[in-house]
Length: 195
Length: 87
Image 1 (cartoon, rainbow over the protein chains, first blue to last red):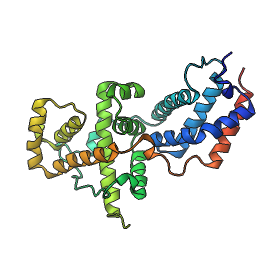
Image 2 (image 1 turned 90 degrees about the vertical axis):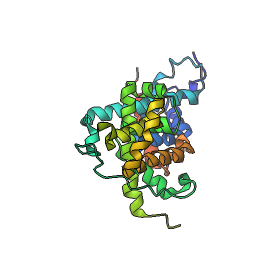
Image 3 (image 1 turned 45 degrees about the horizontal axis):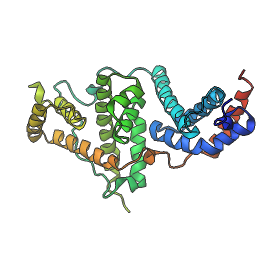
Image 4 (image 1 turned 45 degrees about the vertical axis):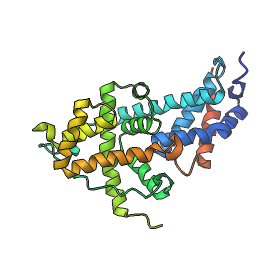
């Protein structure tokens, strides 16, 4: 009988304790990849459910936290795939939203007035960035985040999402088209930060 | 010429960011950008985004409010009620 995951074995106190111990951290990472509070909450719940159900079978050869975050990554991708099945598939020619028949910009890029200095420290900007990421199709957002933030190997991102290489490049390209358009629309309207 | 369309320029700019442009592709990337300012802006924006986000960690984009007490409660209840279903 494994001992390292005894903490996860089903019992009311253990399940409560798992939420107290890991809930906030799991949610933090899930929300940084899913951008909708309900989706992130679901991913956390699914993760802890799966962990508690599996605890007795787990061999205990890696730390509990690493194990849990591994499950979380799978649940995030499951979420995205389920959302895709629920919603219509994105149109094959999404580029038509950005380019007319001659291949010219429908809305020519004008410029991004990103916040000066370290934009990541600007709360308003980060909130806008999160909103724009939420507006992207979930797979595009996750591909973009995995590839850009985590500087993940493209092969790893491709496997994580379960797509071909070609699909990955398409996802990234569309994510960029959408993200920069959204930021240009919403951030430029706000103007430079008043602080 | 289709290789100079904005659509093509934008695709090449993305390919460049992904390190997928051939040497020849990189060499000819700049010419269409001279004649198309919006395409040049697009390429700049990709670079701006990339350098901004390079400083970020995975959790930089997390929900600033964190897991709510209500959600914590819901999750706890869901886990407790699941107990009755296993085995």
